[in-house]
Length: 162
Image 1 (cartoon, rainbow, N blue to C red):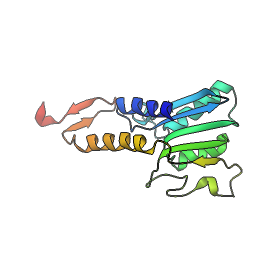
Image 2: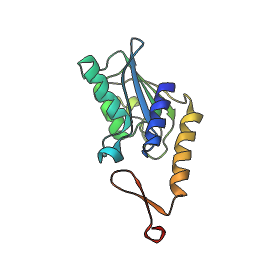
Image 3: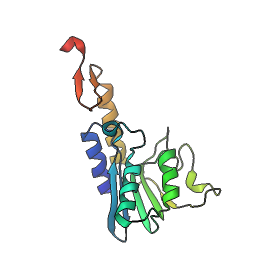
Image 4: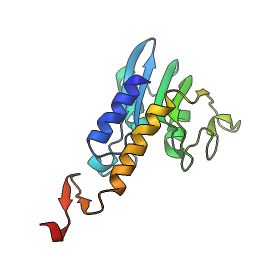
């Protein structure tokens, strides 16, 4: 989970929502990622999606059986759906996401017997550190009312400050 927190910090440093994900199998990191939605102008470039793609490329197989996925924040519906399709053995989450989380907060995809694959879920791992990254990011975002972010992710001062 500490590696996933490092990925989350990298996302925050890039102006992205600080979420990170690392995928491990047989004691080796096979995929890692952090949010890239702003940089890529891609709403699907969540940390989990980036990490799943990297892991599949690393092992040459889209099935991530035997893998553990570490997410700093409870995955959203899109990412949880991708996890069901990728078939890891377990998912470990940091902070809960009461607005979008689909491993127990808004809905619990992993407990739904209608899906063809279920995985073990462990929540609350390094929750404080994960939550602090998010809270700090959004606090800073709320406090910068006079700054807009361009498509390239660079800060642009409001017209009256130029």
